[in-house]
Length: 266
Image (cartoon, rainbow, N blue to C red; front, side, top):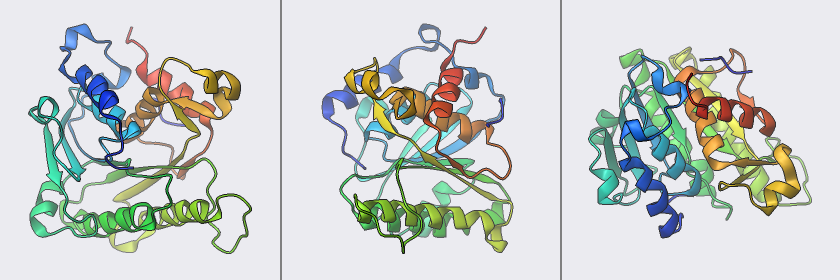
């Protein structure tokens, strides 16, 4: 399938536990497959203090080829993390507004993983914020002539057809489906044709490691460990995905690719 190659909602104890990994020196950690890519990359990340975004940030900081990480956040990150020389935090007063000073800092990015999501059904956060970002950032692409890969984690059960009647969590499912359609549309805009690629990642239940009772009961068709999901999305950001593919819904495929990315290089 792939080439071989909710904001600010994380509990403080998990935040400190995960970010402590960022201070480990390189010889002490297992170098992942994608650490050895020779491409130097600038990436954008949102939701960096949430459950998934925090893991993405932790892995990003350990990848030498990722030389610039621009985090869009509601607040400053902990000092032990923000002091990392390749991390730049932009404190956003309004995620619907991207003035020129912010756009200058974002311009030239190779990839964006949009980890800002919620289970509370907030339409501004789910639909408006990513759309505002895409509308603003896409305008920089004709000038830089640089292709961006946009990865959008979404729900396992979303509905893009807004006319369909659903029995369970209808508003949330359609809301996420609307956001998916919005972000997919940028891949086909004539003004930036060939410069924007969207991948929708429809994961199941995201779990901490090691396996817990939900993992044992539901299995790998519905559950994925957060480190595997993060590795899967980072691999997509760095190495891309098959042409014509825009949505991944197989949790098992995500797990396999995530584990491959996390495996120790031989």
